[in-house]
Length: 184
Picture 1 (cartoon, rainbow, N blue to C red):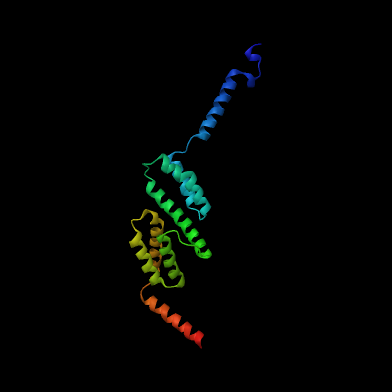
Picture 2 (picture 1 turned 180 degrees about the vertical axis):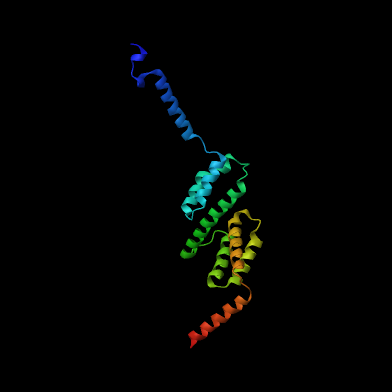
């Protein structure tokens, strides 16, 4: 039987081309992402407001980017994103601990929680002082880095709100007025 008598799907050139297409497709699908691709995919996911997307971006794109391209020009931005993710996780863990009355794992955690309590009470000035003290005390401690970053963020937010020492006097005066009202 002559090769021209065979159906096209049984001819050698067709089979070779099909095999090449399959191998090429698999190679393309399994080829690791480049540095710009990893960075861009992480950026898209981290722009969302969904912390689950942040975790996925860190696991699938930021960690491989850091591991495969240790000299990347994107590392400063990657560090900012990783700090953002770590700060979110730490805040959530802290909320859980405060809600359940659990012990704090570190001095940074304890100091941040205390400053946060002042802030939630409405004493912005005391909270600001405590956050600033936390930054001063723990600035060089790598284990407390996330709490220093959280404190810096809160300092910036309090300072942007225009809080001053007169607010402390207003807080005390309001509390005294409320106490007098309750006493009556």
